[in-house]
Length: 486
Ligand SMILES: Cc1ncc(COP(=O)(O)O)c(C=O)c1O
Image (cartoon, rainbow, N blue to C red; front, side):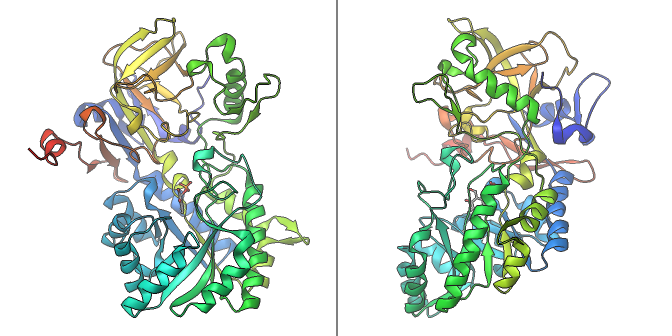
């Protein structure tokens, strides 16, 4: 039974009418006021996550920079909030860059990512002297020639990949192993150092990697950091300056407690008998036609680290040569440590509310709750089928007879399920009920589109004063049709 709300436990409460209240706000009142589907963020939780990173870095490693990954949840309000706290930004396009600059984040605190940067994005970065995480290797020539045209040298980190790590998260969001569209192959690093040094307009600044997202295994970070430190030595010998090591983002969040998550993974194994997953697939497992040998290769939805425990664990562990990473970083001149957290900054700080339209059964007899939220507006469900969230009925949180069900969206295809694994509700919902999905603060509107011409949802924040504030309006008819030529 999933009754433990994990990181939410100390922020949740209920109203006299049995509605879910979070950080003092009645979720049902909010849904009535702004309509559904609705994304809700909590300022105090975002600030709390940022401070956990900041305080632990302050204690463990003086020269650091936190660059919030704008892609995880983009809004002026969040960026201004984080900017005032001292955060920088990881941006992945000229548009994210503009949002970060508008929020007052200074150019030296921005790191420019992307595997297919446009001319205008590169020009903007070079002119503003923003550090570019060069990726792929072929981009070095483009950056060099653009810098020549502008007459301004470009500061670059080399983004690397090809590290000996596998199955640390879902394939689609793994960005640092052999199969990755991102990064320069670590085996080519030495020759690339020389290549950079031979180009007139490139200023070497450091090395960068982004492991992937929802990483819960700290040893993956250790393997990668160890390799980066060794490569830094090679770089320095070649004359390539290592002013910083950028470890990217990736730290996972707790969607489920350890026990609950293991129970879910075990139940997926019995799906052939229990119809626990969509089309009885072994979602998240490598199947290989051997039912007795299923290997988990998907996301781990239970993470025992939070920002304040992750940083000391990362830096104080002895990994090789009986030295901690802090000691090893000192040996290469204590470069600045940059991190680019997204999900771990906002994921546990947001929920989504949707309205129940019907409760029905498939012709095969499976329960289906139909809601007004399509999979395109619900986290990474479109690319990570094992992405599952705690769900409850916001307008009636009393426990009843438990109800296991698939939850379907309102789009016109059968795969439009908010997760391809069954969810467990405290009771059977009814038409008009509100479903509350937890831990949806990161990447919820990432794929939001006008599929079936539905408007993209609205987003609100509950401020530290407990007031709801609209961050993004729900699209209206004229906005949806505004782009159409007659
Ligand atoms: C380069 C880069 N940095 C940081 C992040 C943020 O990752 P996460 O949200 O897992 O922390 C991403 C996510 O895709 C990324 O591509």
